[in-house]
Image (cartoon, rainbow, N blue to C red; front, side, top):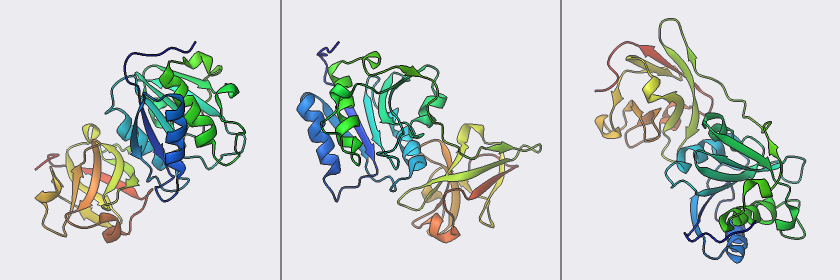
Length: 269
């Protein structure tokens, strides 16, 4: 049943829509027309087009900084108009609305308590439903409904077979070293890896793209301008960086490039 919460609900938006076209603004218009009291926050609209894995990483990185009860609307949807499902989920005290293509899998697979439903509440959708813009016609109306107080049970049946991303895993070797991968490149050219800082051994060096980096700094400024270094970034993951430069350009690295962490010295300078 629809309710009217006394607090001001918050919806974040994540997409690959960019800002050159009115797609994001249109989704906001749909939400505000149905829930005028909502606060809308743009998490990012700079996900690379159709890059579901990048969207999943950025959403996972950002959602936890919002208060429990926040609704997160995420649309990176190369399968729009096909037979992929629309889903809504509860995890870690937050609620999510997204296509069932792996976009939520990093969050759902790590949360202790998860509930996922297949959205079938067609009466909420904008009519007619476009085959190319479910962000407007399906996902935005569902996010607005949650902000108005709808329960997940009112949206559709519970499922447990949501799509999981198939990503390379971190390998720990017998000598204590680790093998991981670049999973994201930010706009500064920093190479973010899937190696979490709390899991790293005592480091001798980081090997990537034929280079060995023997400096693990606490900040970018601990390296000389133009110098490569490894650092535990703000997401808690190992990053390869160049002070005042681009590590991606310097190393010719890309998402998926292997990263090896050799066991040895202390983790920080």
